[in-house]
Length: 325
Image 1 (cartoon, rainbow, N blue to C red):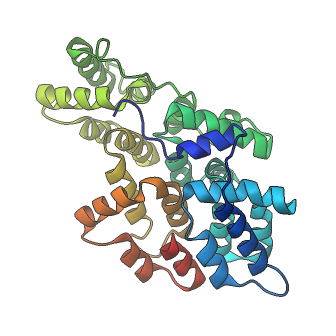
Image 2 (cartoon, rainbow, N blue to C red; image 1 turned 60 degrees about the vertical axis):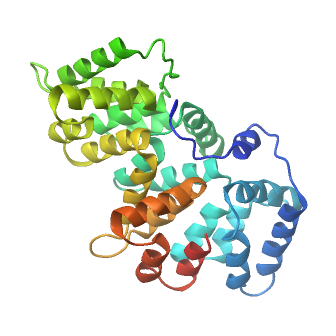
């Protein structure tokens, strides 16, 4: 890949610039949602069928169009009509994709402590364009600079990684520049930053990972294996610990093997005691554009379909909405 994978479709990028293009099915969906939420109580089945069956593009357009037609934000309607895990997921589904990511960041950083896993899975490993959209969206929704927020809510080495990701520094792949000599130099640089005389240079490692386009980073990984008999992932695991290690490996994974990395993330939300419903909702929502590829990797890795896992780990309207998605 010449650049990090986009999780927002082209239509969402256009809509973020204020030029959404609607079609009749979008108006029909808005009317169905309005009908399902009018009067006493909510018709959950109709709501699930309407918003759960729509793809990322359609949901984003519905979010814009609903406010135009009815003069109120669809997300606020979902907040009023629904509750619990089902309610939070309907709120996410009622927002354009960048706004949903912004809401997840808000959730991750609000209250006592920061939910690092929730935060790094939104911010890390994103393309330059989507980092730019995300920062503008967060400021529009919450009147807060995203970089300042992350800087104030995090600390230590993981903060260095977040702030590097938020700069959107990934280079455009150029075979003339990212040549064999540059690859060899990159492998040596990575090795030196892992084994400096004064310890590991975490900030420099994060800079290298974030700046490197995926195709170049894969070439460096291959060269690193050839020279040192381990890959970049192994080198990072040896040098880092805790959430910083998790976040750095996730960033590297989203550049080199995005479908596998997303599949592992989804699986992790249902591993161990109990289900991380917030993490599960966020992941399935964010990766819907690439979900067919992610589902294939999930089966290869875990011999289990994501739908079957959701069925066994969740229940009620929440389960039905995830399965519809």
